[in-house]
Length: 127
Image (cartoon, rainbow, N blue to C red; front, side, top):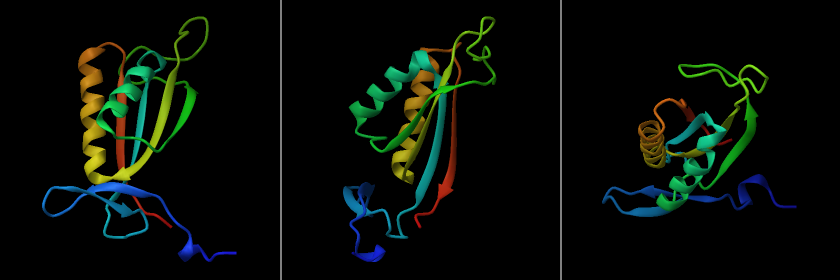
């Protein structure tokens, strides 16, 4: 059995000092990792994924398909009164990619001004 340090961890695209993209191991502590939570209406889900795919970002994510809640838009409770639902994407990536994902969220907010789309970013550390 291989030791944890010998396991091959995935590589992520990171901009180097020259501004060019290169692949780095996520265990490399010099890579500034971010955790992004995107909560959006299920109606926006496909658009979010296709915009990310077109830009080559957000490839590694976890999706929670049915999320209820209320923010600055219409409540999404999945019941007879508020039938819509949200979905949640958890994305771990480098800080450069996080900024690009923020641009995708901003683009969706302009495209769907009444739907509501939240984006939260925090520092993450690979263990």
